[in-house]
Image (cartoon, rainbow, N blue to C red; front, side, top):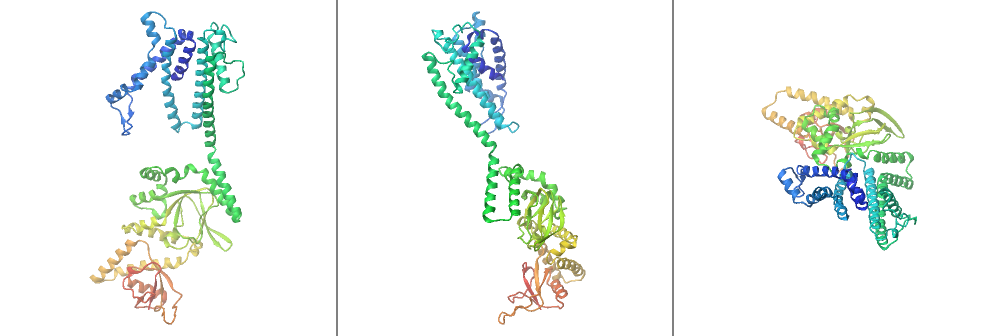
Length: 563
């Protein structure tokens, strides 16, 4: 406000010399006092070193920098009350054009307004559009005031007052009120700036015509600057709307060209609209430019409690939870949107943060809702853990936020060196499967056999531990179990109760194999095969005839021939 007054008064007192001798002189002294205090305070204000980008708060360095700068000299020159000093020394009031031009040094203070607007434009607490409009308005008002004061100064000092733009209308304008002359000046400046030009006030002598030419040329640039800025502000405000409408039109064209059904088109439109509505909530776009430590801290604050409550990760060590939360991605889905499709490849599983989903089994053209899941529940983990096509379709009931965890990250964690964590996950997962309702169990391939095999394996492992073994056998068993634990996830294999197929006679062998969870030892494998196939074998071979001697050499989905 003080800078605004200084900019107005310095030009006003130059054009209207009588105004500088009245009450404005006292106001000028008060304003200069505040800026003198500001000069003193500047010696105690830290600054940012542009070479090191460090804040310098050493008083000696601050004072040295300020004293050697042009800003210090100009601050002193613009703050000195020259007329008051002249009156104190000579006893006379300082009059004349010299004092008026010296007062123009106060325009140096306008740089503070420029710095203020730069800070406000970057401050998120203020509306950018409003700040820009105020800035343009201030620039326009200052230019109108500047031009009006200069034109009045030209007329006031012209040798023949009646041959001026204002003297032709008001012959005694020098003796009339100051505010009358200021009103005429502002009226002319505004009319000329807006290029209306009624013609009632116009340049008369050559000095005025010369100034008018430069003024109107500058007005062209000022008008272009204002119109360009206002257009940019309006377009920027509607940019997201234009982008959304363009994306929607592209979807409509695509669905029409490919003749997609209406339900699929509605899903695509709903997802696109949600994308724009939740643009400020999407993690990737908001966090992509932030350091990794800050992104991890934000994820910990938002989603750690959700991860810890999920059944698969309950009781996990803090370090594993921190690693997992740092890798997750949050997504939003609109109502009636498929998150997972039945029989698709299992690449991710999800934890529901908010909203709700339906677990659906598709049977031809009909669908059956098998379960409803809410916040804290998991979806898609069965396909990921078993490495089978997703057994269910997962569809949102309302606007839902979910956490997506990739199966690669999950398996890296499960197959880590810490077998305790891996076994904890498998134990929690098997417990969860046993608690599923019968309708869900029916839709998961081999689930009943897998659960039965898991129970049998536990019982046989207990019996094996109670049976005395020789030292060598015990060492081999322990070693095998330790290696098995390090893998974490159980392997699934298919067993056949006969010798491998003979390629020479094109014998395809037994096609009715049994899918089982691979036990921890060869002996347990023979025992399990005897229960499943009804006969006990003594040899295990692969499809190519190679005999199996170590259980750890087997891989997921291998075909084993026991005879």
